[in-house]
Image 1 (tube, rainbow, N blue to C red):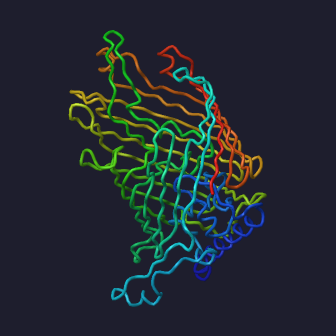
Image 2 (image 1 turned 135 degrees about the vertical axis):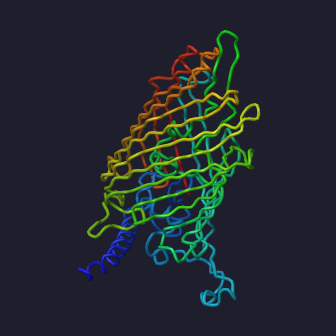
Image 3 (image 1 turned 30 degrees about the vertical axis):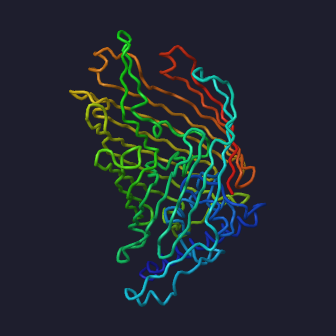
Length: 479
């Protein structure tokens, strides 16, 4: 019995290494253009890593930018494979110092490394929109291109990594979306993977379910992540007055912050962090927002990239890696935002979600609830709340063809005193369905067709217009 217990960790390591090697080899030989790159989104494995490891996109992606379980383990490990990363990479890094320097520290500088190839990738996204939105002057339009990303990522040796993303869009121009440095296992006396520190401007992935950087295959983001209390424009039909909050913070925004995260017992993930809590660059109220998130996975590949004894990868044709497991996750976000009359709007959002993976089938459901204590800067303060529920189902008919269906509801509520003051107009209650199809034309080129159908859209109802339904066609290329 004792001997078996001592051998169990070794068995898990051997299985994990075998799984990674098998997927890499299988992907390289099964893809037509194995070294062409891997489609990406923010903080996902990017074409730089395809060149570094000489592997196919399906090694880390289900349908880029949607990550598979190995891709998520790669991301959580600071852009390294969980096992045998040094043996798997094909492009050797440039050493900054000799290995014996480690023995001389602190009398010598600890050696590091630079990427052996230029760590740059591009992503170009072109969209076509067909719309029933009566607030715009067109019924269909080209957005060529709609987004252009410059992406860079890699490792610097000694558990230090980097990820940088700059974006150009039609609406916003040029913006640095992320520029972060992960420090993996900085305290060597702690168990492996139990504490990492990520510093910089970054997205915080409060939910991985449906997240546009981790789990999104279609075009549209989930409503809860895009909601800001400033979206709610209250109207007084009698006087013509309006009331709108200055708090335009959306939880999907990347922010400057410090995050402490880690994996405990292989299957439990945690993170806590302090963020700037503003939509600008510098702080605007000398306060920092706080968030936490926890996740637990049952079955399949553990969050640290290993299998239980007897566990094996679930491989489909064409090098596609699937999984069988259940993930539950929960988050909390707590912050303040300056609003009118010198007041601070204290706000918080809580969320809970679950996701079931069974081979080519991916099912998930989630719920998010938020409260703003004083969004309009009134005295006495008046609160507002919102909640959103969503479900999704995705299925791979073929390794290159994904069908998707999402349904979500968002409802808002303001204090009764505000309504009694005459602001009876203005709400933000939405219900929509998002059917879609994603086709991998190549592993780094994907086409997306996604419909956005509102079954309830309160702003349009109050203005006497039709629901702003849309049909989106997307061409997404990364290289």
